[in-house]
Amino acid sequence: MTDKTPPGEHDSDLPGFLGTIDSIISRMESLGLALSVLLMALNTIANVIGRFVFQESLFFSEEVNRILIVLITFAGIGYAARHGRHIRMSAIYDALPPKLRKVFMVAIAVISSLCMLALCYFSVGYIEKVATSGRVLPALQIPVYWIYLWVPVGFLVTGVQYALTAIKNLVEKDIYLSTKVLEGYDDTEVEL
Image (cartoon, rainbow, N blue to C red; front, side, top):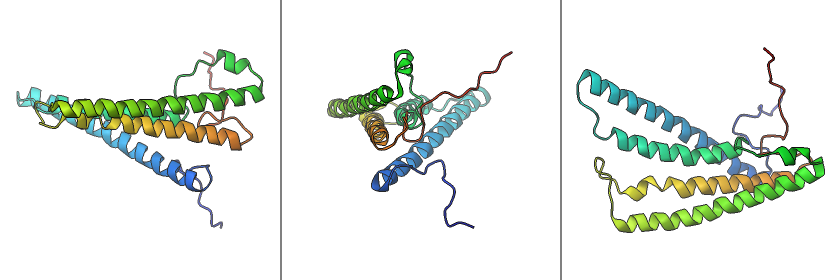
């Protein structure tokens, strides 16, 4: 028997403190997304049952789903970056030799990280404006800006994820789309 446990879904390949941050973010993303999707499904099902069985809708259902959509969207961008699942326009990139692809991947990750961090900064300014407006949700009576608190968090997590991807590509020999996803294509095509 070995003392090492097999690597889990949330274990990071990054060294030291960076790996700890990466693992914590991964766990929080997965838990937050799973709970949000389940809560949205339960809320929607309860509203449908209430409407068609008891002829009475849940007065707060639409607002809860709106909050959850914002959370899922902005937690999801970090999750997609972590798993290398963002849309890529890679025709030119794929035609490049490996050394140049690595340079491009580092540049893409750094630029993406800077863009996400800039969007995080601007979204904080937007939230401040919404907060000073004093608007509240009609049914829940929650300040509207609370919904948007997930926006800078999502941009920050995504910016950190792209920065970690850039670092991973600088310290490793291979080319990585994210800290865990090695560049390449799977041969999963099935001929019918």
